[in-house]
Structure formats: C-alpha cells, structure tokens
Length: 300
Image (tube, rainbow, N blue to C red; front, side, top):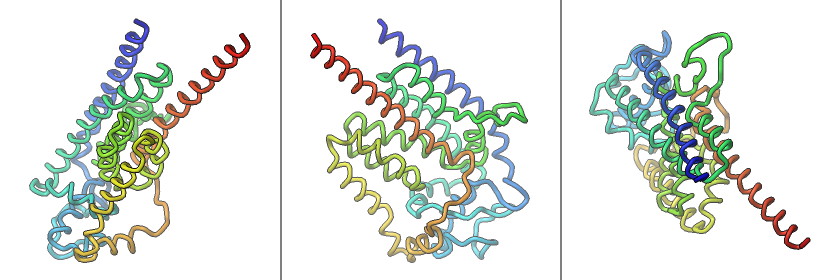
C-alpha cells in the first residue's frame, strides 16, 4: 500500500509539472510567429536553411552571412546551422512544408516529446525516494530559474519558454537522451545506443550522459558501445563523401571553443545531471544501508 501511494504521489507531481510545461508552451506559441530580432529569424531557421542547402547547395550548409543564390528566403535572415550534418537527414521531411508551418509542426512534435519525457521520468524514478524523485521531475520538466525582476511563466521557466518560442531542438533532445537512459535502465542496449546516436547532435549532452549510460548498460556494455559507435559513424561518415560536408563541419564548427549558453541549452544538460545525481544518491544510500545491516548482524 505504501509503494502504491508513493507511485500515485509521483504521478501527481508529474501531472502538475506537465500542466505547467504545457501552459508555458501556450504562452510561448504566439512568439513563434515573430523573428528573433531585427537581424535574425528564430533558431529554427538554421535547421530549415541547413536542410534546404543539404539538397540544393550542400557545400554552403555551414555558410554564415547573407543569403546566397538559390536560398529559401527566411526574413530577416536565417541563423547559421551548427550541428553535425546527420541532424538534417532526420529534419529534412519538414521541407515539404513552408517555413512557418514547419516551425510550428516541429514545435508541436517537441511538445508531444515532453509527454513521452514525463512517462520516462515516471518509469525511471518510481523506485527512488519520493522526495528525490519529485525534485528531479520538477527540475527536468520545468527547469525553474526565476527572473525576480519580472513575473510570468516565460520568466519562471525560461528554458522551455524560449525553447518553444524559437523552436530550438534542445527541447526534443531532452526527451531523446532521457529515452536513451531509460532503455539502458530496462536492459535494451540496442535501443539505448540508437537513441544516443540520434540525440548526439549536441555532443556536450552525450558526454555528460556517458557515466549513467555505462552504469545502466553495464550488463551489456560491449553491445552498447559497439552499437553506439557504429550508429554514430553510420549517421555521419557518409557525409565525408557527399560534397565533403563532414570535413567542412569539422573545419568550421568543431574548433574546441564553447559558445554562449542560453536558457534552452541547459534543458538536456540539467536533465542528465539530475537523473545521474538521483541514481548516485540512491545507490550510495542502498550500499550504506546494506553495510549498516551487515554490521548489525555481525554485532548480534
């Protein structure tokens, strides 16, 4: 009965957090019809123009600056595409839609992914201490960082607000990396590896997730590592032979520098950190409890 009540309490926390996330999306949605500023369109413009150039002008995918001949026009001008070229393969079906429609469809896909994220969190955290799991849920589903000078959901949940408002892919990346951790947790290394490869368009998140992924995949470590490396290679190596896109990416975008961190950049990073911390605390507490029980038995 106690375990059942704990599950219900955890589910209640998830429902409240999910409702606040959806409310944040509703507040952010009108902002999707506006450009970022007087110079650039929303973050989504980088993905759309990158996918357009992948087909129309692949040597210019990582070109930064004004429009080039043949570009799809996104006003005032699109942002520069920064991710590995494999991201564009999965994104390219959205090119069948005009820019604004594609942006809104992508944003709704991201919103749907948050429902999947909520389910994954419930499965991952239901066996953990209730308070610890509840804190992790609030952090991952809302990432509350208040701006004390203003009031409103956009200032309380800035990561998700701007992730939705600018259709930035770090929202969906949060769900993808959580799914990779979940499949590792339930001992499905192939599924975990596929989702790692799929979510690795920002490798900072993948690097941070390595400890918990290795921990959960420890019973199938060889399978997980071989499949992960193989899929990441399969997704990206062909682009060395297609207009040398991969080499251009390495020359122009992989230079060892760390760019500015925006509110939405923290979404997948904090999610991985929270899930790793919960697992570490739970394992440490369990080992301490076992040690204490052994000492009591020895004393008797």
